[in-house]
Image 1 (tube, rainbow, N blue to C red):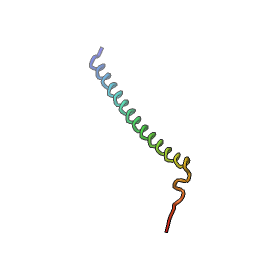
Image 2 (cartoon, rainbow, N blue to C red):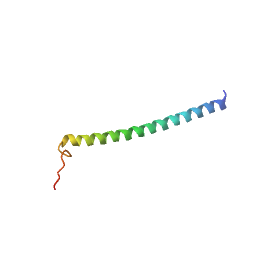
Image 3 (tube, rainbow, N blue to C red):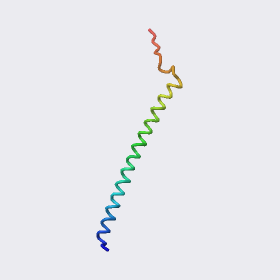
Image 4 (spheres, helix red, strand yellow):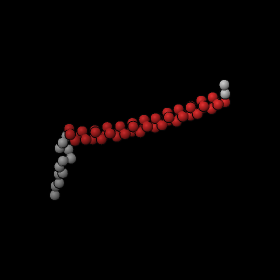
Length: 62
């Protein structure tokens, strides 16, 4: 059994696993930010559907 080669293979496998986990973590963070932005946009639009008169008219007095 070639112990040094086995050790190198296991080390490379661990590095690849760590990189994969880091990439997935970053992707999850980006998706959470995107979801938060989407929810905020939906909330803004739903306010107009609940109160359709808000922002529809401008009152000007001279």
